[in-house]
Length: 129
Length: 480
Image (cartoon, rainbow over all chains, first blue to last red; front, side, top):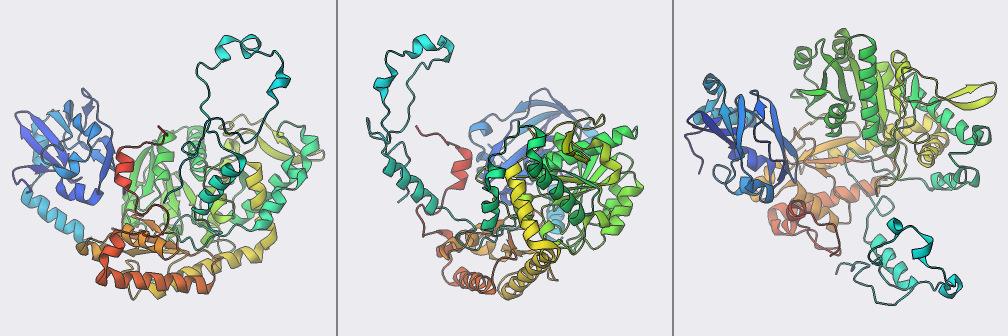
């Protein structure tokens, strides 16, 4: 079930907004495209990011893919369960497969993200390319 | 049934050789060696007889598959036959017993080989000078990037960005990153070539280099290479040639003539030296005259006294490997080039291009080929259409093992979904290509009729389908 109340970044991250913070994971499309995820380096808490910065690499049996910061801010929480169980991203990307929480610097950056309908159209375009 | 490990075969007290321990007399390691050098625990070596040892490793070697067993269409890797004359020459005592520490006056033969190999690679690539020091393609890339950095710093403007196409080998961004650069990606157009508009937008005064594989990883020649070179050079950046696919160009065209400033060679691909097994490799780097001062130190110089190493290179990026690279491997490449000559090298490239196009034609009825025009030495199939049946590129690859072939590269390049990348080196006969095409046709039939055969493949061989996911998630390479 794909939650419709999230925001999406063009690099296929989902963003859940919760009072000044955002929880970030990768979209169902992204986990499906990557295939079985075998490793990701857990980001460092406290690190400051600018929108579009590389955060960490996600490694699957097929390929590795970069996770980008969907907004600027500071990393305030990370999902340590992924250290032992990266497959949580494949199994439950919108729940137990969350990757990190960012304290947002500028709420206005959220306006640049896509809502579900826009992301769905974005995916359709990507597929046609 | 998989072969047991040598540790599982161990029987306490069994010996391959008996040493005359009594001759040691009253020698005691505790007295002879400082305490820090003594083991705290006995060394846990497997205990087997000599014949058990031989049989174990012979069986393991027979469970392996290499170019001496059969066709090896691993795209981008150029798994060509390694002529045995290379091995003969490498074993000549004058070469095999030369020592890197001996005086250069007594190693003039070895230095002649290295010097002449540099000259040959200069002629093949159209570059001004070569360093044979790097011992792998990826090290060659990094050395190339370090020279690019030294060059730009000497121009008074250390640039920060290396531009790399989305179809590139993963080593390109890795090498540029290690050399301290930030990576920007340039996209491919619908034809699978570099999008010139995108390139023109990305390349600017902060671009140090564009790293380019030509022919690219889709097996296509970058036909606009001159326009690409112009965009890159107009911004003051350098053009880097990833030599992974040089096998398609020998004697036909040269990177130097296309405008490349730095080139690396994959000796194990193009020049028939052994791949893999962690064994020694060689990744020489070639440069244009503008980068001469930055070559790794030392370089081989020739004067009236013969050959020697020149260490007096104030702007050099420094030494990048012990001595002067992997001599034995370079010697094999020298043998290969000398044996073929200029006409032979051009025939190599023509034949691999013909082989790949022949195979592509034979497969196009049964498989989707995203880039439909003529290819160079390799081409890409896409298995995307079979995904709805639960069949992926790797299922086709695994099934090929049952038909006696090594699998092609899968899921690369990244811009083609469910890619199977097939290379057909020049050394393969038409009958071999036909047999491979027939196997692929059979597999295509199985995808419709018996897909479970693919999902459980390989069913031949000692071990069946390996669980690659579990192996990657719970990596365990240690016995006990």
